[in-house]
Image (tube, rainbow, N blue to C red):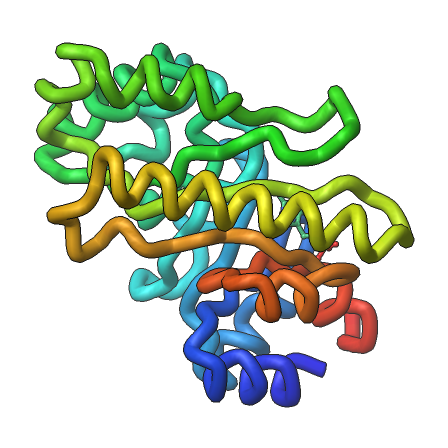
Length: 218
Ligand SMILES: *Cc1c(COP(=O)(O)O)cnc(C)c1O
């Protein structure tokens, strides 16, 4: 599955984040040897262990809800944080990035699903954040775009509506806050069950786990 998927996505210029949460280092290495370099984790502790034991040129993406008090542990190496869902968190990322002497790339996570269990900002919260003087002074974070998770449902038209909503949010932010930015262009949407729909609706980055790992040796 990996080879096929990675080929399709490359042809469409969509980045593949292999979601390796709960997967063994051996399985990750198997994909690394096929050329995969971007892996996504949703827990800080697990990411730390894997970062410490796997090749140094892997780009580790944090895709799960991140608590502010854990940011400092991943700040020295994390490549992209998909899950910025609050002002306090962004401030902490900026602070820890500064301490680590880096600029950390981030995506703003929006709540587009019907499930209340999923995290994310509302467009109003994002506006407030981006308009604030504090944001203007954050020199150690760079916002590359947006991320969202659709409702877990077989209703394709609902999922599609949610992806379009995220694309709309992205375009609106681009014109109002990031018109001069060459790097604000990423839309992280699409998982094992809905990646095709996500790509059709403008995804630039998909996060896929089970679809890839299901058929592999343990
Ligand atoms: C687990 C997870 C994924 C991948 O889900 P699959 O259905 O296994 O592809 C993607 N995004 C987030 C935020 C996740 O937590």
